[in-house]
Length: 263
Length: 300
Image 1 (tube, chains in turn blue, green):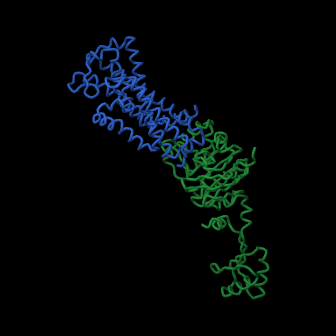
Image 2 (tube, chains in turn yellow, purple):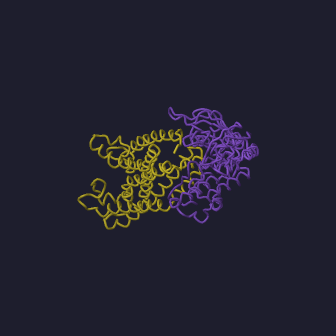
Image 3 (tube, chains in turn brown, purple):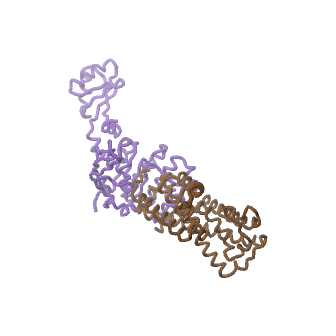
């Protein structure tokens, strides 16, 4: 398995992919966190979907990571694209046969690929957290937000919790991308379907069908990063979202193991 | 341990209703170069894919380097393969592509530069794969196949896209590997190339093995011909009658007579022609090439 992880990491650290992904991460984290503080008194709100987050709320221990957690869904979308592309490209480039000749255990290929992408996602989330926390501290004074509680033990715990939850969300979307990549065997199709589903279809469904939100995988996975919401509890997001991914993952893993490699 | 590098018995692959390979039986002795020939769609790539564990047989069995093909993990570390052309990551350099495969197989990456040099890509290893010409891609594919220092090398159309000097290099490479004891199983449409390097041949047609054995035996089983040309064209008829009356099958091709005959009959023909007042401008025994034999056997 370790050989697969090393081989996959060689592909993931190619400059174009690595630097463009990290640049996107920096821009998203910086932008979301900056808007949170810069639009603090705006009538249009400074949070998700026009939500107003006051200086008092941001002064709480979790204020230091509010910007970071609001970036989670988009970080997840980035992960979805990378996981889907890295998986499906093996079919479109015809490189899967090379991999399987050098490592005949298909489950090791899949496992190694997944672990290497998890490492990539962790690096992405760590970078996002650093940028977001730096931006939060830098803009707190401008937004009249006090940082006393951020520097407390509770503040540090919030950073830990937020990182874990955002990571779960990122990996959840990434896993969804990998499932789509294995099922559709085309990077373009898997990315297009994944992104359209999460960003458009689920939102339309949630609007059109009452109470459908708590059943939609994207909603459930996103909800974990926020630590739960009024509509969907943290546990529901974690377990139902996880169950969807587990079932999907089991099906595509079985197909990957059994399917003839004929391209 | 079986002395055959590859052995298949009743190997069959059916896609839906269509048999891609039907009850194939053949053996490739260890340490030989074996040509694998057949028209497009005859089942060559399907066979190679089954031998490499990429697709599962519908029926029959096979072994590679003494291990059953249902356990490719036991023999693939000793097998190098290039299947259906070179497939690599376009955004990575040639060197980095080989590094990926070396890491995956647990081979030292220090081998990579030597292999790039061996296939003539030593100074182009840093270039991205997508910028390579077809010939360079093919060379990189061969380098990748050599990564494990294989006991068995499986090459599917290794000379595709190569210029004449590239083809000669691949031929020499295969000969060198074979002389070091590597078994080479090579499919190619360049039958003249295969004729030069293959001691053994496996020939497929419509998913069935129509010949497997020594190349020499295959060619020896074919009828040689004598090509005779009289000095004067008006003597063609006389010469035709001489050969025919001696019980040989004769055909007129481009002002020459093709006489199906043992080459040892040439002196007798020369004498008979002289006695009939016909001077021969040329009399050449011609043995069938692998290409002609292939066309005859496959009906292509």
